[in-house]
Image 1 (cartoon, rainbow, N blue to C red):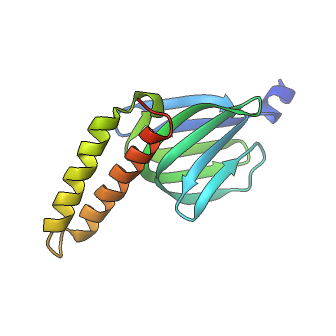
Image 2: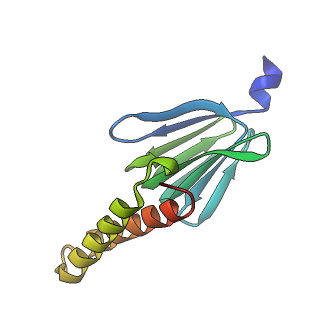
Length: 140
């Protein structure tokens, strides 16, 4: 048992709607605000902001699963990586046309946003851009 836990890190991905993933993984790469975070067993403790992007779950040296997240926070300890995401969807489930429509709508709202709404409008554009990029990289 000690060998199997030493070779994995417990990964949890939580969105407001549900627990998206909860499993031991060999490595997970999280899109941090300051750059991608590769989390392996024994990682130093860390709390980071997550930018819109794709989480890669690795198994046997290859990416096994890719999940788009729309931002959030990550907490890392030597034995666990927990990501609290604003939204999460498997890359394979992204509808590219819907993502592009969401981006167009977000850009339109950003162009019309007043001073009070500008920051939120820019955040929504960034999320939609990340979703489109994820769809283009291997979604539906």
